[in-house]
Length: 161
Image (tube, rainbow, N blue to C red):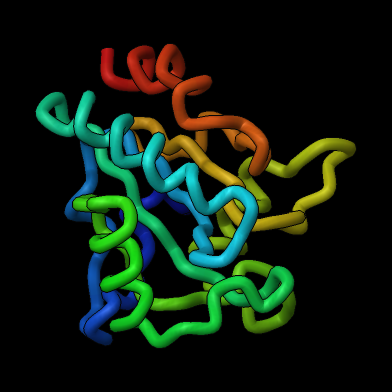
């Protein structure tokens, strides 16, 4: 059976299990995030994107990752406080995960296989790599860390229609 977003369970920041089938029928943007990265200010743009489209069913899920320059050293609780206090993040930021390597989260293994990067390379190169998922749970597109949230508004609108 082909996997879709609904096939996966992830950990929330509090350690509880979250089944991603709760987002069935909604477009979702999945982003590996970090608090001490040059791209961290994208939290502001991500929150603006979420606020703009959440009432139409759009969701963003942040997955903190410490695999790139140790730029996410905090605990899950510290990460939540950082996101809330510094960027007013209201979309879910999950528990810390690995996105590369043999212990990569299964969700990220699927995302990378479904939408390899440039030259077919699956590895995530840096924080704030983004994956847009369709309403039917399939990966629509992968975006590089340098792609700003405002640059993907048109794709989000298409995914919502």
